[in-house]
Amino acid sequence: MISFLRPSNIGLAVRQALADMGFAARLFFKLLLSLGPTLRRPGLLREQVHFMGNYSLAIIAVSGVFVGFVMGLQYYYGLQRFGAADSVGLLISLSLVREFGPVLTALLFTGRAGTSLTAEIGLMKAGEQLSAMEMMAVDPIQRILAPRFWGSVIAMPLLAAVFSAVGVLGGWVVGVKMLGIDSGAFWSQMQGGVDVVRDLGNGILKSLVFGFAVSFIALLQGYLALPTPEGVARATTRTVVMASLTVLGLDFVLTALMFSI
Amino acid sequence: MESTSSSALVSFENVRFAYAERVILDGVTFTIPRGKVTALMGASGGGKTTVMRLIGGQHTAQSGRVMLHDVPGGNAPAVDVGGLQRDGLYAARRRMGMLFQFGALFTDQTVFDNVAFPLREHTDMSEPLIRDVVLMKLNAVGLRGAHGLMPSEISGGMARRVALARAIALDPELVMYDEPFAGLDPISLGTAARMIRDLNDAMGLTSIVVSHDLDETFHIADQVIILANGRIAAQGTPAEVRSSTDPLIHQFVNALPEGPVRFHYPAPTIEQHFLEGAL
Image (cartoon, rainbow over all chains, first blue to last red):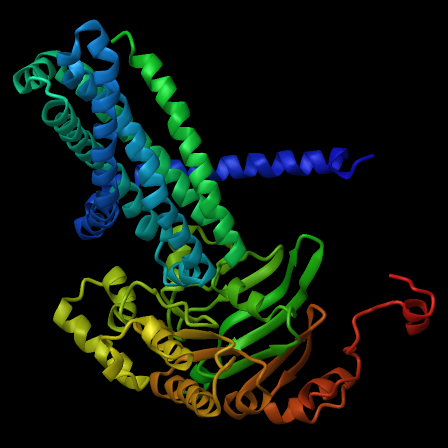
């Protein structure tokens, strides 16, 4: 019989998977409960928001501009067939605020900050820094993981807002300056068609959820990484794959849930 | 005073510990006397680091007790480290300092901040006071001038001295050293050994040193415990251990290639491998 089909091996794999899930669930609740202690040390939180947010700003802003450029071109191409080219601004802003802003920001954040989080925690584990902290009677989850978790949760909606804003400006450059759409129509349709609660709220909620998901996956993978160079490399790869798929899956679920609202 | 120095700080009572099927400690009993330097020696994988992790509560014994005793004259009962909940365990750990093999310094913090870390976490000392304490601790390990450097800017030996300053920042009762001499040049090695002895005596510490370096370790230790096959193979003063007639101890302290510990990993015979082509 093939070795992995042996009942004992299947049992071991199932037990291991359940143990990992249990550990992940406990870690997630510990991180949620760490909000109070984290807020009591604002310096640590501020440092992480700065690290996650500020250092991701360049890639987010540049990507936002290009996405806005492309949207301007593509939406103009589609809408001008129906004589609705003036609606390019509205469509760009709805797409960015409701969908592309949160999703692309989360994917870029995964690549920029998520991988860095996993590698950092994994290397701290490999270098016995987390053990050293435990031996100093300091809980590494509270001291190291929690500020990074909440820092990411705070940074994500802010970055998504920057992405959307810069994307709209990119769309304006292409639509108005290059393709000749009327600037007044571009902005007024946007102003009249984007609802603060339904559309902006939708986007903010999404990016908050993505912030929880991406930072948790990145920290969990770092914390579970084997303390070897290969282990940290594998954990970093797992972060990208799992966080990206989770973001896309959650996006569908959230969009479906909020579609009728 | 004599009773103070000879009382036990840590005692292992019939401790058994295994990783899955592999037994590391099999019913081990010994004490770590207060105020002394105790060396833990033995072959790699023999359970030396496990002993320190059991004392620190990072591992829990499957059976037996690891007792941490109160100061002499104190009225707190001895605690079984393995049976402590988180708060109790953290309270016990605040009485200990541990020096990891490669220092385990926080790589994103300066030397100063590394040493200040336990002070900032566990005390409400003002920053000027923390500054003074940190500089005093760094001075004790000869690195006051390196306070502004990052861990990546200092040598391995210096990193261990910084880690030592961090380990003694809160004036612990017990300091555990995991292979403090590994990979050090002769000057750093001699310095590190002297420092362990001097700090132990000057601060009234109790020290546990895990090391493979026979000469330096025997030179500074008051008591040597040699672990082999999950049990204590020898225990006593360095002179007693050195003069042991036990074949295993004789092989160990004289660094002989052959003896009870075999040089060759178990393998088929030479004939089977080379003439019959077995693999």
